[in-house]
Picture (cartoon, rainbow, N blue to C red):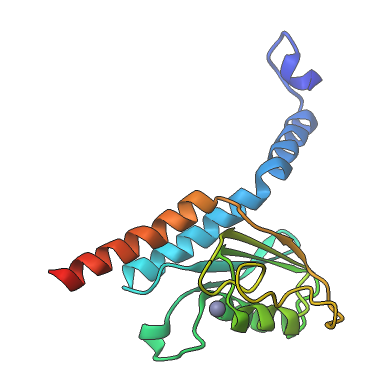
Length: 179
Ligand code: ZN
């Protein structure tokens, strides 16, 4: 703080760097979620259900994905699966022990299962999915006592924006179906 309060208004390079780091740690989940939202936007533009995900490893994005069920004609082509595949290829390892996933929506049972297979360290998601969520909403898959992998989980990050994108998509689809 002393750098910010100094009367002269000048900070040394290291003080400025520390201030940036402090700011970043307070909001880094939101910053990565912004990247996941950008992926969701790509799904929206392709006419897909707007869900996006990124995999972050040691401060870098190593996998990105958005829903592409229609584009690929593939029932498994969920945003999280796409991001996991890209991350595993980038790292040359299907175990993603040091990685975190940021997903705009609570993952479904398939994707939550894949996160367990990948031994992901942490999952951060935006909106809850009351219809298919597999963290806590419908069918809890993560952190089952019978499974020997435990994962840190944080929900509700930028949840309003993540949910709004989905709601707007389904509203416009219903309007199209009526008209
Ligand atoms: Zn899924």
